[in-house]
Length: 306
Image 1 (tube, rainbow, N blue to C red):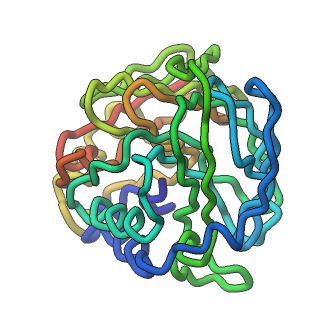
Image 2 (spheres, rainbow, N blue to C red):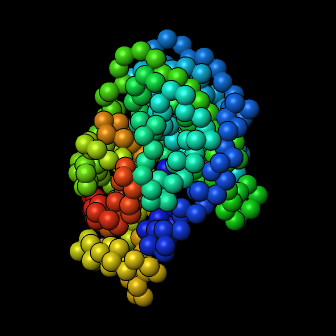
């Protein structure tokens, strides 16, 4: 769920990502016209979903509960993601996106948003293979990225341009998150890291909650910054609550998981470099509202790999 691809610095500058997400929130009831749908076979069979500018193709009308394996192909000119939020029956897109925008702006998470999972940001012309668990219920899928095809400027969030879809998950199961050799586990409000190493790898992100939604946003510091220096620098960046202090090295984005509610999680691919200092942060707000967890609860962890 997009906070910003300039994540830490932009969040500190008046949490400016929110304005882009909220614009156009009330005009997003286009999922029926923009999403091509098919019917998934019995059992959680592999699914291929194609992202374009600005629509999803191949989203099944129904899925079977359990761990989904999705190949997400971005054929667009800008980055796309696929956030999946389970909603209470009867929730309309207009109502849903209005409440979502309020939450991203520090307000409370609406009660009709029951659970979350999905596929993280995918660059144009690339493919992401992700696994994630879904329980039975009604879902709204959408993209919150703001890139504009054919331009270097951001625009309205993609869900406001019709990049949404609806589907139903049926059957028992879906209460076990996928696993991998490397894991990032979120708690309220801390990260536990296991098995991360240098090189290409698949990471399983899981939210153990027990109450809050979280995601894992990995950033890397410039070469030569030690873990101890990075820890001090993150603290300075967060404490500034505004423009980054002069002379403080800023980490740059590497990769992020998708947002997950407690008990949910997904896999994503990452390439990490030996000896570099990284920081994983969560920029999601509490269910009751408030600042992002990295700001309000210091939910971040500096790490290195070998």
